[in-house]
Amino acid sequence: MRPIATQRNELRYPLDALLGTRAQIRVLRLLAESDRPMSASEIHEHTGVSLPGTLKVLDRLARTGFLETLGSGRARLYGFDRTDVLSESLDRLFIAERDWQQSMVDRLRSLFSSLKDPVDAAWLVLDDYSLGDPLRISVMTDSKRLASSKQEIQGLLAGLEQDLLVTTELTGVAHAELPSVEHDSILLLAGYSPFERSAASSRTTSHSDLDARSLGWAERLAHLIERDPTVVTRALRYVKRTMEKSPGPGRTDLKEWRRILETYSQRQLLNFLVDTGERATRLRQSAPFVAVLSPEEKSLIRGKAKSDDA
Image (cartoon, rainbow, N blue to C red):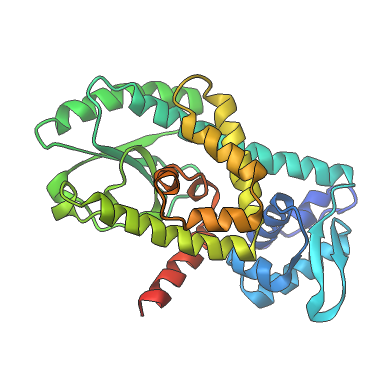
């Protein structure tokens, strides 16, 4: 893309300066969602922007006056200035962005829960998605039911496409044809995640094996929360928003998670995440954290897992 030939007055169009690059938007989004100032190295880790790029973005944004800075040198922290009218509007914009994404996911999950013939699993493929691309949805079921299931789902997706102004691409997968996909590159819509089990043993994997994997994920999540407590804040917001949009029965686990996130100290929560008791093991299956982790944070957890296995 060629650079813009004419520059506009940033007094009249300050968003040109604030949202000028994807790196700036990532940094602003992170700081708007955080309830505490963050260092440049933390921002670099959570946004995926290179450290030199992060420093350049922070310097540019700090000069606009929409970021507040604390300290100096390597100890300098950066926070989102919420006292400015434009900053408040940006904050609401990022909230609207999250709500838009969540409403789309809620509609898809509701669609799959209404199927006359439920599928074993359904997921949204997140890899290499650009805004405007079709939503790539995969469903897995018995090969004998695959054709009829796809036909029913495609009929329901037609209404969703009209309502949300999106297009969809539906792929049917038989159990024996499960593709090789990173677990973090999908968003589960129905059933269980088939990528937590091998295609050959998806029906025979023991509960103890699944519990062990869930515990390993929770241990790595606990390390992430120690470094960035805003993960807890984001998870609580997600739980509250989900409960508001899905009133009625079937919310027992969400109610428990809401009470835990609202009342437990950080140390209590970290201990609970890795507890091997019946209650903690059960609630790990419905933990709200995965839904609020950024791709960069999921990559950090994956990287920690690989280093642990090395």
